Image (cartoon, rainbow, N blue to C red; front, side, top):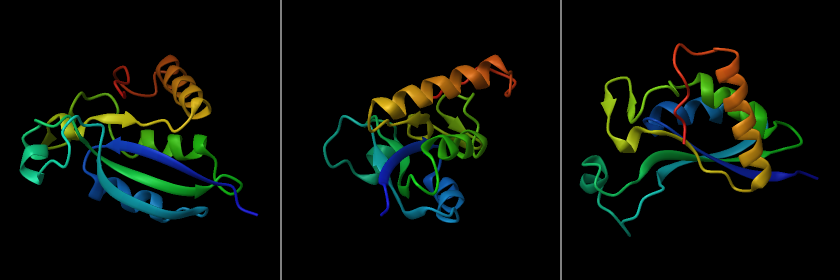
Length: 131
């Protein structure tokens, strides 16, 4: 019996982050889209202008008995630069921000714990700005 869960991450361009997770054992589905905005049914142009508050994100369906949320978080943090505000490489704008959209309190606690540990261990050259 599988223990299906959802993880939602924004780490810059979703075309760059999606392939990283589709290759993992225990991940059954990865869907790219926009999340976290305040505009209902925004156009692509509105999102690109940064007017809607949306971020490019991916929704990952995974079997928690095969791959843990913490493992997905580790991969998320090394698959993009979590220390740059509203930017990933040449992509600049609020739609490229780093964020974890926690689905429950356990995910929130795991995310906060991992960010604190990565910062304490000075894993990156600057503090993590992931929302």
